[in-house]
Image 1 (tube, rainbow, N blue to C red):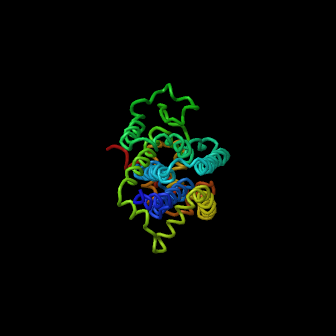
Image 2 (image 1 turned 90 degrees about the vertical axis):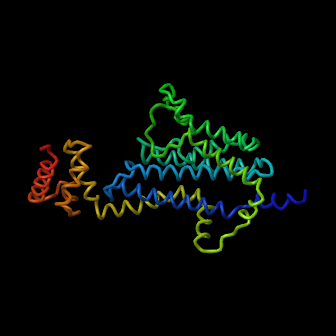
Image 3 (image 1 turned 45 degrees about the vertical axis):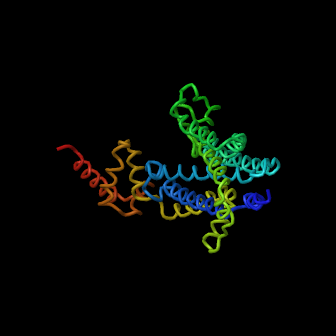
Length: 318
């Protein structure tokens, strides 16, 4: 009996290794949102939402947070369910999720966040409680059910707005962050199963006892322990700074060109390639700012028109 007590005490403590992992996820999230902001404010010509690698990067970040949430749930209740700490954490995460919904409703009313990563973590924390008592194999089986659920149960009958949190509708809702229960709860359950399996191994003591020794790891630990306030505030800071930059430097030439092309009823599929050709001849950023603001001189407009005609001739079939 006494041989199990050191491990019981160790697993109930906070692990530096888990905080480092959470800090890395926070750093990746900031990188993604910084890139998204650059694209949204047209400071770069690339729309990262149209690039598969960026979409998978975002999904990987969300998945890491959810698996860590499941793993952390196991650690927090390794010696039995602790109701008061659980309820306090649930209220903190749930309150933050509500704050995100309200803030984005006023900032982006057409695409506000009604069930994003924080909403999913809050609901999943409740749904995962019964799995803390189940064998990890059963938990992994349930995880597989939720992961494959969208391929099995998706139906237009589940497109009602009040069912969007499930993620089984035939059409995705318009929102800036969408992390529904299917399939994402499956990743929380993977974290739960992984945590239970890891705690049965003696090698876990080495991981639990590891302590950060260098400044970089300590910075990641700080970020991991402050992940919720960082999540809530980082976009306010990033958008505030980059919006000021955008007012000074204006949109990227490629973004301005595509916007002008679309305003002139250009083909959305054709505008990017035509603009790429035009910008080889007319790359000046300030010129495109003047064109977008309808303040360009006649000779500037003529120069762009000639470049556009030449590019269109090059694309015309011979």
